Image 1: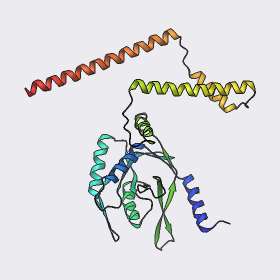
Image 2: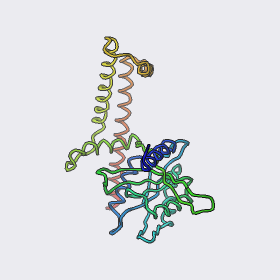
Image 3: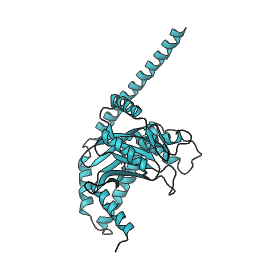
Image 4: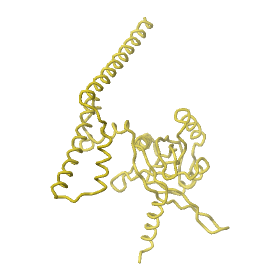
Length: 287
């Protein structure tokens, strides 16, 4: 028999499985953390609008912006006009991004959260509520997402229940550069690391590919020698990988690579020449 608290936890886990998956991009987390650091003096938390896309099974949060608000024990006031104007500006830049919900720093849902959620329920269908524990209550920055649902008896007082959702992290290739830079400074926060050059990134990627190929070769040799049991699913993946390798001779590959490098160098040269001409023209105009 489960205790009442275990039953509630079990119910929350089951409901999170059947709800949409929330995919969050790193730029959203960085923006929320930055807005918290820049909050007004005396403010206990910050709130903002989440932007992204929605499909049948997931909600992808790709952008956000903070919304000014004042909060006390008795009331909460949100600058709705500011939120609408910011959303209109964002639509000009990214028309595909829509309002998917709102965020708040902290680790708990308050009565004021219910009032704010009612506003976003008018702006979006089934908006999500994202919380980010910037106070590190559990020793780490917990990030949780919720979906609200009304509960109560017909004709009686209706309450709101926030159901937890599954949260995953997703990033574009351009965001991966920033993530890798943060990863290098994690163990030594006082050190300064700059962005690596394109050549170093290519070298690192080639090294990772080489390590993965070594792992694959080790697995194949162990299967052939009988040290490890063959897995049919792994074999299908390997066959699919081999079929995707283009059939090209070493001479043709070298010719194609050199041609692409020459095109890249030409574009780089022309861009640098254009920058020099613009800088020279600005100085002439000033004189």
